[in-house]
Image (cartoon, rainbow, N blue to C red; front, side, top):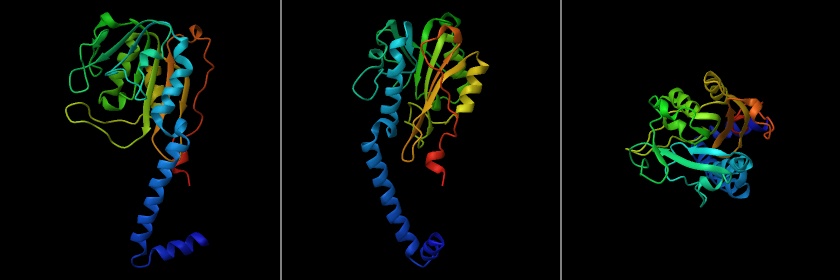
Amino acid sequence: MIQKYLISILKLPGFKQISFFILNKIKIFSMEFAKRADKNLVRPRTWSNNELRKFSHLFEGDIINVSGWRDEDKEGSKYKDYFVNSDNYYISNYYGNQGYQNQDNEILLDLEKKIDIKYFDKFDVVFNHTVLEHVFNIEQAINNLCNISKNVVILVTPFIQQEHYIENAYNDYWRPTTQALNKILKNNGFDIIYQSSNDNNWYHVYIFTIAVKNKESINNIDKQLIDYYVGNKMFKS
């Protein structure tokens, strides 16, 4: 009853514009407050970095951050420092702005094209953070990530985020769902053993995924899958 009364007021001349202006200001204030008050959940980079820290120390061998640019976690550290038990750590990039820089242990890889067979099964862990949304041929990209991995692929992908791109560096194409990730990974012989999301009411929503080729080889990660509709918190009335 109250809702109908308020809606009828909003329809009056001049009230709609003023009301939406006020509501938008409240929304912006609420979002900024939530980002500060609960940054470990609401700020997607902080959240996803914390998720990675839960597991990164468990992995050994050769590890690569694919399309990792400078390997920065945007919180003052390098992702290399997360994988404290790695034997060798690599990054890959491709040509262009924010691309290949000929750094130590940097490999030139184009995710949109079939990768040279010499890289197949080369890395024990393949890590990829917020890159797949920028690759138009996303199925080929995930296929490449799976091909170069001996067993583990770790993905961080946005599900709710505004369009973002930089001219002559990268474009913006996708927001894959949990079902899409599961389907494409399974088509490449990988099963998801852990998946989570910072699903929230206020800001960007990411999905964190760990998938493996051989589930029996991973016994130190408790299986967790997402059993809800990601995005519900923001859009559910």
